[in-house]
Structure formats: structure tokens, C-alpha cells
View 1 (cartoon, one colour):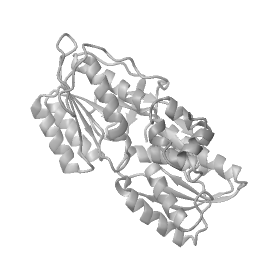
View 2 (view 1 turned 60 degrees about the horizontal axis):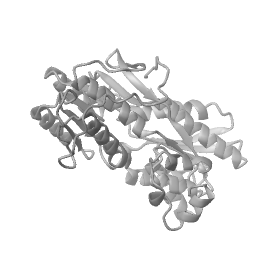
View 3 (view 1 turned 90 degrees about the horizontal axis):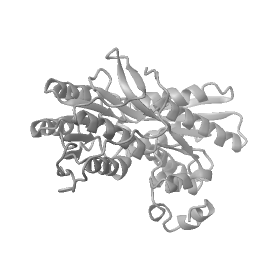
View 4 (view 1 turned 45 degrees about the horizontal axis):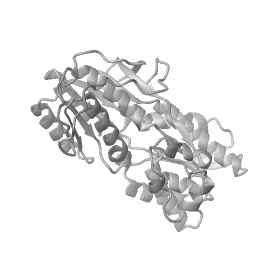
Length: 363
């Protein structure tokens, strides 16, 4: 299990700024010249299925940071395909990237890519997910045990608000190949397992964070429990929405608290409508800026600034890391996510949600 040995970073590390570059297309920016333009950065994002954030947030913030630093870059998405992930990595290494940042699909695939990059003298960064047994020089993420802890505490608060001191709870965990999912569960199980009146009646992981499979899995849970489920710990907003769809079909949406994560537009709308109890907001811009600062330093042949280390039990090494603090979001503070610019009012407050936004103070 990962242990943390640092004080968490409250704000992103400052970027090493250079000359502004103009993007030549949707994937890469051309260098603006000067001292900052010392290398090329490659980024491999995992998919669009597990969460909308990878394309709507991470890509945008990373592009902005690399352009500001005056560095050429190439950001691609593997779309959940492990073979494609490796192909993209090979193409990037052939194209001459000097820094490679990855969000692995699983530790096995990620390790193979990181090791090949290291052999070719390319510096590497694990972004958001630690590659167990890997060789990344740095790791940038949120405190993922704390993410899970917020989810567990959030579900408990919602159940208490409903007057339930005892409850039958179902877990819908993230992908078994994603180390973050393991850490999330460590966090929320550490909270919920200590509540004497709670009984865990179902506990299942969702392969590849697939929302369609999540719906099928939860429907089976619901049937097996004859509908006697009082709360659902869903590991992210996509899984939570799959749960809500099943609850809606059975006429009990809004009556069974459901958690989430990522503060997606869909998740926030479910919170505003009362169908979802809470989500966890991870200020992706801070994460992207911190990772970009490390990448820019490495591209310039310099060491990056970190806040501590995270232990990789499979590789038996302590990885220099930057960890950021997550934040619980409920109906009372949805406005925070809009104020931060993570989602816009136009995205969130459409149609039936306009009045709900107004009541939540979003103007």
C-alpha cells in the first residue's frame, strides 16, 4: 500500500515560464525559441470512458502550461487500448520527446513504457496514477486515500441526514487494475467499516471503470439484495450515474444516497437534482500545473521541486512526488467548482438545472 511521507501541497508549483508558443494543431505546440525550448514533452492520457476530465480538463491545462513555457509537446489519448498506449509511446520516443508523462491503463503496460523510455534516456513522470514497479522519476497526483476518505465521510453524512444510524451499503469500486482505485477504497472503507450500524452487503470492482458494466453490476447487486440497499459508495461520477439510472428505473432515485468523484458536469447536475449525495473535486489545473512544472524542469535538464515521496511497494522504492488536497462537494458548495472555472455555468446550468443553479447561488 502506498504510504505518504510529505505535507500535501496546497497549491500548484509555479511553472517555469518561457516564451509563449503558438499551437500548430490540436496535439502539439511549436517552440517559440529561446532558453526555455530545450526539449519536447510527450503526454499519454488513458481514455475518455473512465472520466470526461482527461479531455475536457487535463489536456487543456497541460497544453496551456506547455505553451506558456515555450516548449513543443504532443498529447495523445490511448482510448483505453493497451496496444495503442504502447504504440503511441513508441511513436513519441521515435519523434524525439525528452520527457514522457503517462497516465497508465495498468501497471504492467505502464512499466513497459516507462522502462523503454528510461533505457533511451527519456525522463518520465507518472501523472495521476502511480505505476507500481515502474521507473518514473516523479509522481504527481492527489492524496487518493484522502479522496476515498471524503467519499466515505460524505456518504455517512448523507445517511445521517436521512435519519439512518444503521444502513446496508453497496460498494461499486473502480478498476481493479488502477492503483488509485485501491487507494480510494482504502480511504472509504477505513471510514465506513468503523461505523457499527453499517453492513456492507455488496462489494465489486468495475473493469476499466466502464460505466455500462457498472450499470449491469449494480442492477445485479440491487436484485440480489431485493432492493434493500440504503447507500451506495460509487467510486466516481460515471459509476454513480450508472447507479442512479438503476435507482431511477426502480423509482428510488434521490432516496438512496450515492457518492461520486471528479466533479463532472453530469455528477454536479445529479447533485443539484438530489440524485447524488456528493462528489470529490480534484482541482485538475493544480495537478496539471504541478506536473507541467516538473516536465519543463526536466526538459531543461534540471531537477524538479517535489513535496515528499510516495512508496511503491512493488518496486520497493520511494518516488519523489507532489500530492494535492481534494475537496468534498455537496449541493451547498457546488458553486466552488464553477467559481474555480473547472466547469462553466453554461455547461452546468442548462434547461431544468437553471433554477437549481440559481438556488445553489450560481449566477
